Length: 94
Image 1 (cartoon, one colour):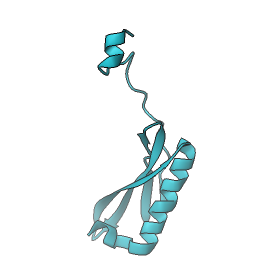
Image 2 (cartoon, rainbow, N blue to C red; image 1 turned 135 degrees about the vertical axis):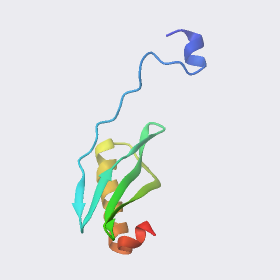
Image 3 (cartoon, helix red, strand yellow; image 1 turned 45 degrees about the vertical axis):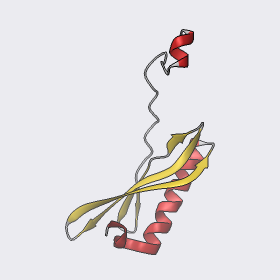
Image 4 (cartoon, rainbow, N blue to C red; image 1 turned 180 degrees about the vertical axis):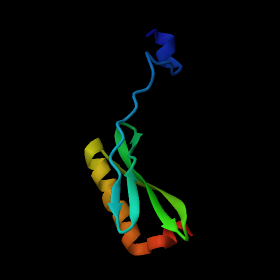
């Protein structure tokens, strides 16, 4: 890669996609951990899905917390999503 490409944001190839973590079932909800790359670390994030009145609702959880290891960020994302489900239940979607 040339100096000018590096300076102005060019890359040597396509960005690497992070592997998708397995969905977790919890109290009638589905948690999809989606840690987001952030400054060399991973931001805690998850998508929470649940059925409300026969309709699938989605809540996107994104925290300011960052963790160095992706696997640890996946586990922390699941823990935080479970905590929100325990505290708010279907009010997450309202």
